[in-house]
Figure: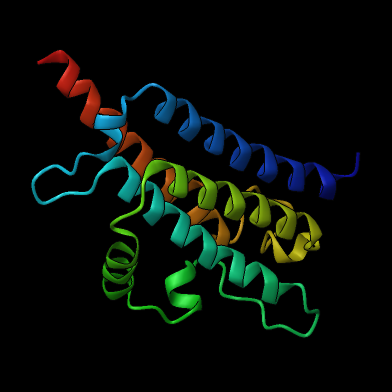
Length: 167
């Protein structure tokens, strides 16, 4: 296995693990826990839709990065900077558009976007995944929504229910 393919596989493995972590979390919760919105908050369904919407933005960028003539985004820019998205407005629009979704719809979308993002990333050359292949610091346009942002929200959900179980 080449260094380049090892680095790509590392990214794929990390994204697949985060995806499985979400599935495990969802499987551990009741339908009521998944659907209930806390005061001034999002249900687990809402959170999964939110995470998926940002991963879809990463997918949009990955698709543009397939073109060898495409400009390479700044390494530190997340999808909101690359796509010039007002994140607060985007988050509100996503919530409003999907507020009536159940977990089945949210999971189907999550699975579809995750699979498409993985496929798109596998097609990209290493220089489109890492600004410097000698370091394990991938571009934020996909790493942030696929791993960092997803993990932050998943851990928030886990903590929400750990506290509920303890009390």
